[in-house]
Amino acid sequence: MNQTEHKTIVIGGISGGIGSALAEQLLQSGHRVVGFARNTATLDSLRARLPGVETYTCEATDPSEVSACFERIIADCGRIDGYAHAIGSIFIKPAHLTSNEDWAATLATNLSSAFYALRAATKLMSKQSEGTCLFFSTAAAQAGIANHEAIAAAKGGIDAMVRSAAATYAPRGLRINAIAPSLTDTPLASPMTSHPQALEISKKMHPLGDIARPQDIASLAQWLLSDHARFVTGQIITVDGGLSTIVPKPKI
Image 1 (cartoon, rainbow, N blue to C red):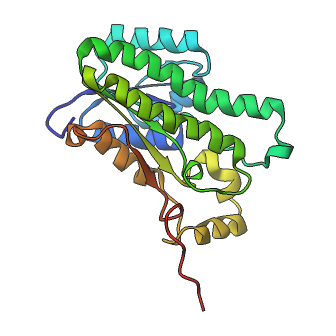
Image 2 (image 1 turned 45 degrees about the horizontal axis):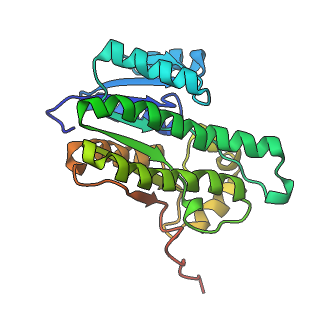
């Protein structure tokens, strides 16, 4: 997918911060953008803000709904060139305070939804002998960050899934990758970013002294979905301002 070759890209969780930022960038580049989310009202708002986006209502944690949604999309669009799974949650709590319900919900929203989408997308793309899937992990799966046990486990599962799927589907011409962001300034993260003190602490954790913007993640996502990344597969690319790999220089 490049600036002169328009393709059909499907975004799961298209109404979220990263999903909508990616949709906007893809539309600006002339691509056909199709997406799904579970909330009809937010999809209506998205279409009003981004005319040209095509949307479907789908509960991503329900495997039957996911399969049916992909079948409807392929029937309407003819093919799917790329899929981006921008669905997830933020859950920050130590293991001993995490209930069974919390754990199940975290796995369902983050890992199970990703697997259901991978299964549906690769089934259809394999018939084309080309296509690419992109998932979103977290920097917390790369570095040990306190109170992230549940979400790190769920997103770490995505990392493993991506590598295995990349090996499985490479002979069929499919590429599978993931982006692992740190805290990103989206509505989902507003409980942390809306409090000045918490936001300042988060910024100081990052060697670059800031948190990510949705556009930072969307720009890389667009590249990974494009033909410019034709030789990239099985990769988990961290976008975290150095959080997981750099020790910040102490201020003396």
